[in-house]
Image (cartoon, rainbow, N blue to C red):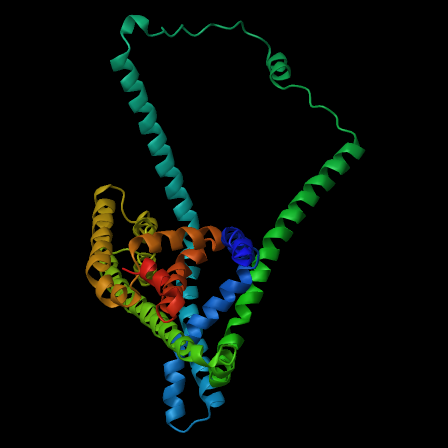
Length: 389
């Protein structure tokens, strides 16, 4: 009886200790995801691409090709397609770069017109709201006495202070140092992003060619009785990622084709560029509609001067966006992801803060992958139901 009385007080203290350890582990995981975001973004992108290309590699393996050769062929064809797509985009962007001075002049005209209209509106509202007897009367222009031209020039131009050469040299060196530091910090972040992106083809190739070995070694990390659940989780994540990315890609191609035809009918320049750009930007959750409207608006600056065409473009792009998200997206993507809107919103907020704009694109696949893993592990099924619809 004394033994049980000694054991019972220690039980309530065990649960807070476990909660504290869990919170510390979650904080460490969030810090790791933030400070190592370039590494994790590169790894997640490579995993998604490997899941997409794996069916093509398996098809070539069934044709009696070695898996390493099949992986090399699939990766080479994919890189060739990306290269051709990049050439097409570069051709459109090079033509667009020649028109940038015209866009700059047009934007300056629009800003001046808007500022003038705002000033006129403010003046009209002031005259309507304030009685005339309270409005200040403009004084007549004062007649200044005539002065010699030389005296006016001397009084208008203040004397320029003479800076010692040593002070000038220190100032120039300080400005040069700040500029060099800014350029270096900007190029360093770009260099690291480009360096991590260069690893993606190699990661994808090794994930495809060593898939069986990696999967077998990964399953060996778990107990024998847990391996079937882990294998189902792996297959569930792979199938979900493929369904999500392929569904979004097909929907993006459909939106790009319809948008491109509409922009061509509106006689917009660069419709081959702004059509796909508007179609795929429309798929970004929550902010897709304004992003999809922006490219055709920019292209319309050199074509239209009235407000009506801009309203027509915004209405058509908004209609296509709502039609795609409410009719096609649930059938092609939503039925395979099974995430509730609250989980999607929290995932977008979380990964958007951690990884920026790339996090908004990767948030839903990562959250859906976690849900697929939770659905196939007995101890984590309640969390899967929490994330599901």
